[in-house]
Image (cartoon, rainbow, N blue to C red; front, side, top):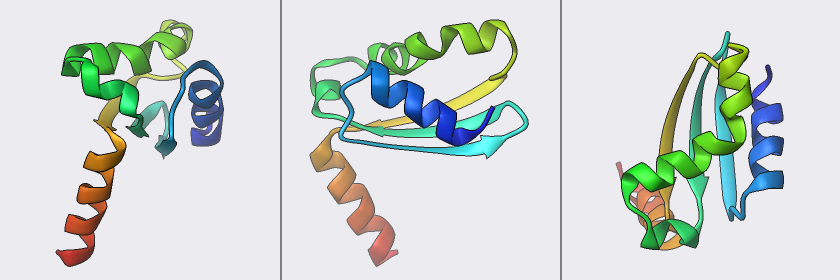
Length: 85
């Protein structure tokens, strides 16, 4: 499975402002940005991302997934911190 395929699935199923996926060999990392995360616990945020990908875990197309979630304000701060660092 290609990172672009995961991006497309998540874009289609979820209301995300931004999505970035990296990885290969069934190990991927996702950065998802949405203000929908503001009212959710970290566990619920993770579940929101995992849910549309469930069938790909079942077939082992995705074996490992690292998820980082941000609201749009958190993402702006994160990018500024990375630029400053």
